[in-house]
Length: 164
Image (cartoon, rainbow, N blue to C red; front, side, top):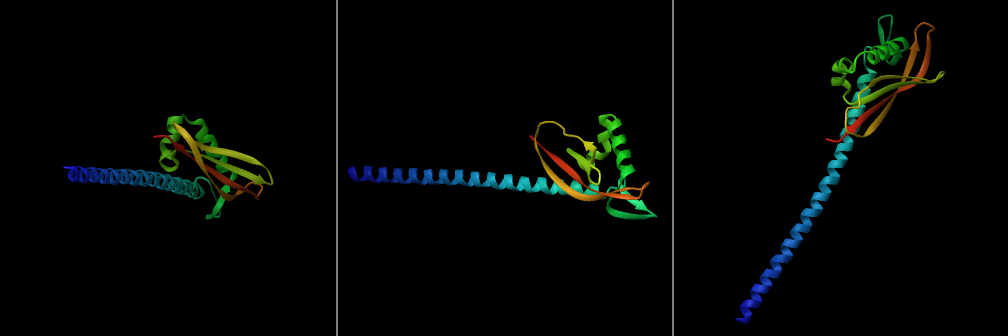
């Protein structure tokens, strides 16, 4: 009788230790998976911000065009001001109907830093439940076609992160 009770006790102890080890393994694996998912989400947000910045860089609505030649990474000053005025005077529903598919929940500002400091906020649609943003800057030159003067600047794209 005693030997069988001891064997049953040993079996139960081994099973309990086994299940405790399995639970500890599952906990570690779930923590590791969460860390990996957060890292992947950060990378996805960074790549989305870069994609939006590249899209803005190649917008025909903003690019310089002289003698039928399009210059990349060059924005026309008057096109920037016209786009800013157009997008900021439209009602929010109409403003975001076309450009939302391209820019999503973001803020796009063009800065001129040399020789004059100026900024133009051409798109801003934060949406709701904002938890932060990922920012990307792309250098550009800004042409004043009337005076034929180039300025140095950059595009600042802030892609908003939201709580789902």
